[in-house]
Length: 155
Image (cartoon, rainbow, N blue to C red; front, side, top):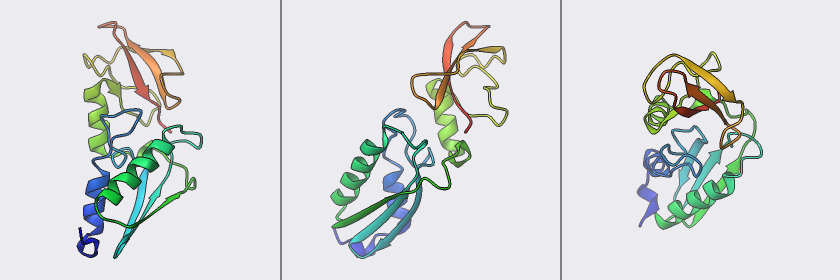
């Protein structure tokens, strides 16, 4: 493929097809991990920010980005990890938040706790544990349907 005709928009679209390794229903673009993209002939540069500095998924994310872009014809893929400014849930797209909820994970809320159960939509919820399956999630339960669910913490 001749990458001289590839646009930045096209690269963003390709990156938007890469799922987050920990929550595969959401892409790394919808999660807000991809911060910037630039293209020059056969070289593409991508700036990424981890959801937190010790995120174990970053190695897999960088490998997936490199594999995706080299398979699209780029000979030189430059990845830059920036930890400042720190990632925030404000960087998540509205589409990503909706995908989380339909997957059964309550999306981050400005008040710091879920506003409803992602299964039955009840507002009667309680925290079980500050810690979930990953450091960015907490465990909650709906007191109406009694189903447990994870809440993506607001950072």
